[in-house]
Amino acid sequence: IKHLTSMELLSNDEVLGLIKRAQDFKYQRVTPEFKRQFFVANLFFENSTRTHKSFEVAEKKLGLDVIEFDASTSSVNKGETLYDTILTMSAIGVDICVIRHTDEHYYQELVDSRTIQSAIVNGGDGSGQHPSQSLLDLLTIYEEFGHFDGLKIMISGDITHSRVAKSNMQMLKRLGAEIYFTGPESWYSDEFDVYGHYVNLDDMIDKVDVVMLLRVQHERHDSGETFSKADYHAKYGLTHARYAQMGASAIIMHPAPVNRGVEIASDLVEAPKSRIVAQMTNGVFVRMAILEAILNGKA
Ligand code: CP
Figure 1 (tube, rainbow, N blue to C red):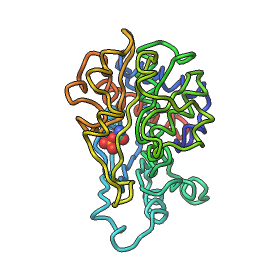
Figure 2: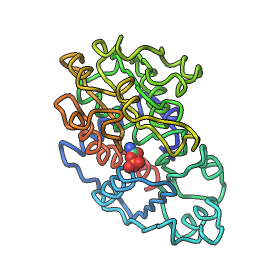
Figure 3: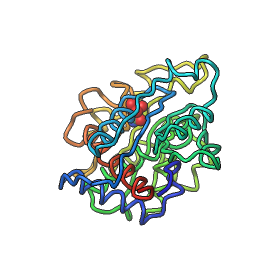
């Protein structure tokens, strides 16, 4: 693959290939030999812990040279645009730029450029896409069930603002899963009806294989919006009562960071049915697979 910007651009075979390769990295501790030195820069213009740091671990495990980039001390603060920043990275020989940015589709002008040679890996674009998160979620589901076809997956919460939900609904539907949506109706849009059905959480909690919780994205809401944590938790959160109703083999996922006591009761984050910590671990191996797939095309 040349760039990784959106899950929609990956074929099912490419997705399954990346999942299998991530499993090689995870269980067989494979270390690829690259034919030349490669440079990677992680450019995060929006806050991140997991995506930023697990890309960094993945890059170091692959033996890549990681170029430090801190947006707050870069020439972005002198008014340099994202395009000119990446043009510079490309000119100095950076092979891959992993970028997180608030603007949806920020990556389009970069991948369309005839001058920029760096591959672009989207680490999240506003409320658009989060392909590496989606791939680590798919790896986590695949490890649990060994397939996607016919799995019932309920995506719950702030769907409108969630790039994780968008990447996952597109890919999981294509892989044969049945998607259900729940959460506040004001954070749902009819445009998602092509991927699944809006349901009542309590009607479906005992019937689904995966409860995929989403973070309430306060930073993307209107500042005047009123929000009660206790009310949200009672109406839409994974409470102990709902946990008790989940099927014996059902699992909980959440991309994190978690608002403990809001999307999920705090002590359920590390409960037996939770795969939230496994998702974070899987992020490293999936990101190794993404980087290797891109570099194999550049060697
Ligand atoms: N899941 C996720 O993208 O986490 P970060 O915002 O910490 O990278």
